[in-house]
Length: 139
Image (cartoon, rainbow, N blue to C red; front, side, top):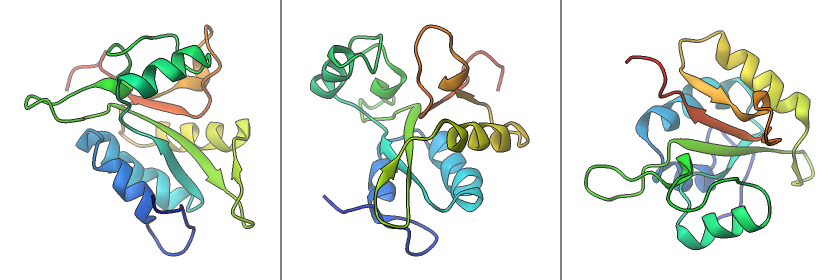
């Protein structure tokens, strides 16, 4: 597995994870998030059954497989996550999950036309690193 890096406009590890994401949320990350915050990276896009059940057991998800936005498939049964979990990579190569970092990304995203929901606004689970497509609005 490729390590995340802050060198350059994109990260090979993030690009690999985005291959299993819905094109809309992948484009949101590449064109809205990454230019705004070059130290932002993708920790999760699509999760299979084993990873989703572990997230549930760890209390990081309230949903069993295949009910999470991370478990979506396209019309051909290929992974097509409609959610991304993010983190910040600091100058020392350490992963960070600061509330303010995610809040700033959410506020910046809200200024765009992107239809993305931030998990930091949810009352039932603290999911500050989670961003997902908003299915409630018409296309």
